[in-house]
Amino acid sequence: MITVLAGGVGAARFLAGLAQRVSPREVTAICNVGDDFEWHGLHVSPDIDTVIYTLAGIEGELGWGLRDDTRVTLAALAGLGAEAWFGIGDRDLATHLLRTERLGAGVPLSAVTAELARAHGIEVRLLPVTDDPHPTMVLTGEGELPFQEYFVRRRAQDAVRGFRFPGALDARHAPGVIEALREAEVVVIAPSNPFVSIDPMLQVPGVRAALEQTRARRVAVSPIVGGQAIKGPAAAMLGALGHEVSALGVARLYRGLIDTFVLDTVDATLVPDVEALGMRAVAIDTMMQGDDGRRRVAAGVLEALDVSPS
Ligand code: FO1
Image 1 (cartoon, rainbow, N blue to C red):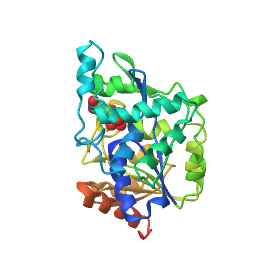
Image 2 (cartoon, helix red, strand yellow; image 1 turned 135 degrees about the horizontal axis):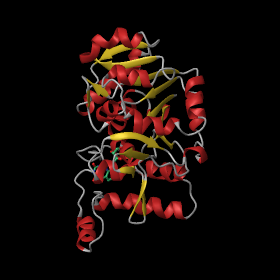
Image 3 (tube, rainbow, N blue to C red; image 1 turned 60 degrees about the vertical axis):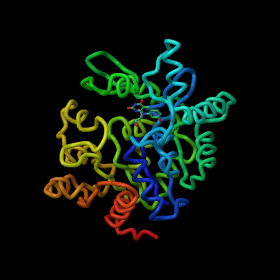
């Protein structure tokens, strides 16, 4: 089994490539729920939906939401003077209506996620890291903001001073999460934001320990290439929090959690410094343009671990 810690668009793209290189039934994705929030009474799980839609090949052009979706409902909400800063499309609404209905019936998020994945014909097993509330709060100069307020409403313009995970101590790892880490042959930390996609999952009691103790070959893919994030605020966050804004800065964050770090060929000069941290470093082309790119990166990561794709 290959277990992937996944959050955000880069992770979803990597998973889509991986599921084309190995049998999807061999893959388990543990998904971040820190971006989840209530939108007009509906429970939205952006990182889970981004993975489902991308694996189904129907994601929007920016990597989230649904391709060619419309925003008639959103415009009608705005017309009523209601909040409309978070761009939920009309077809995407169906997912949130169904998820909210099922959660309201007492069905846990993990079961609802499995139902939604099955409805899209997804064979990769998708597990939220927890079924409990586990929001990411972003500490900024403007005070503490819920993740989507920081990221979407305020366009990630606030300088980040830190994060708080008010639900972490009470969050129970969802069924299958610890086993998926302990029993995997390979665990991949996907090319996701280390602070708001990966760390929230490590904050759930038991998850970090399972990753530290697993016998799996553990690899992370750098989300930073040439000092830039491919997408999102990871580079700005690294800088704002005093880390080196580079693949090496990310490798330092994962010290003790991984045995191999995959970085992009443009950062090949950093290989010795990463290896000085006590992990292997492998430089490959990590750009995931289109399906070929996603498949190539997935194959490159498996090769870096001497795992031959089936
Ligand atoms: N990201 C934005 O930057 N603007 C949006 O209007 C927006 C809407 C949206 C709707 C559904 C969904 O599943 C994701 C959406 N995202 C949007 C992305 C979301 O903010 C995610 O949390 C990020 O992709 C980070 O994981």
